[in-house]
Image (cartoon, rainbow, N blue to C red):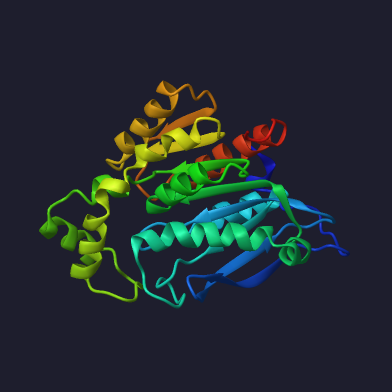
Length: 272
């Protein structure tokens, strides 16, 4: 088991670990974010986490473990979610993830937060896994991506309107700018272009860690992995866990899997 799962790093009085509140420009507003900055001088590899729908599981324990391993960890909330201004829309989530990466690559923020822009990894859970996959497929500068129980939002949007309304009614805590009905319509309207497998061509050369669980969504990620491999991709690592969608009783397993993959990635060449 990686030590960062259970062991605090040595205290660095000159360059202590710290938390910084972020206000990230996206779509004409500033979305909320938090930087968990790793201890130590200089620039650090940085792990960005995209939460799901609505995002009750925010992966903070994973982010803290990643920081203990020497990485900065960034979490954020999409427009119209969890207090971020603006209206929640499914397409906005991908735009917001790209905006976060642009913010972290800005020279002023590189110095303020100690960001090694050559070692940025994007991760996501559930809908956030879809966000991470789509964003990574368009951003070849990323070092890699981690998908945790990823949901195919295109496939989800192909449900009937009644099913979509029920899904949104049960998953819209904290979401602003709509109702269960309008959110359902938004989900269904973009279904055809939001298929998870559509990201595959852009991920063929991207190092990926794809983690699935016993939540009924494993076939979504399995289809993406199969498509990437059919297109010639050889940089995908996978693991399946006997746990629920939130990895409720496998958090240590989750952290260990991610940390081991990040450690291997650190010694490998960047995505080309």
